[in-house]
Image 1 (cartoon, rainbow, N blue to C red):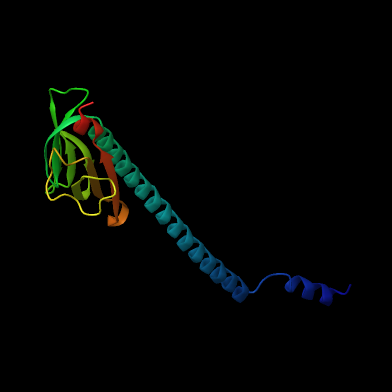
Image 2 (image 1 turned 180 degrees about the horizontal axis):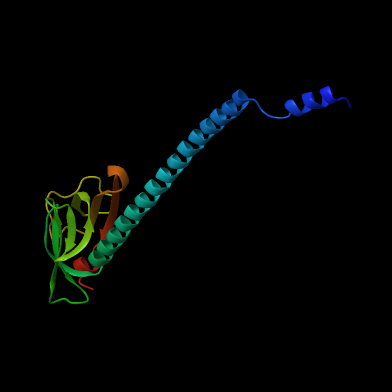
Length: 174
């Protein structure tokens, strides 16, 4: 191989500066797009985790309220935001389920049951499939209590939980 040809091949082996800059720009664009996708994925994961945690808290609170009310011996008073009852486990002690609208806290007696409660309501029914609730709680005609909880979860989203509880022990005295 001639010396001139050999020098030309050695000179053509590298990349030009423009090729290097273009490849770095393309690599940077790909990195930015991948980073934005990763950030979006992480935000979605965090939102889902916080939302699931809030929903689980609401379900647990609703289950506890339903259990307390289904095992009650008698109900002394009931309104749309609170109910006073005697528990079967301790009939001499009155318990009160109430909602503090100012602090958005749901309590049983002085124990905090749930926070971030945006709405809370109790409705009283004579029959399970009644559409319209009774105007007021009545010990002689109330057999069903409907519990409605509006709970603020991730990003201010409000989830609503509803359950109806049959008051068999309070009505029949079993």
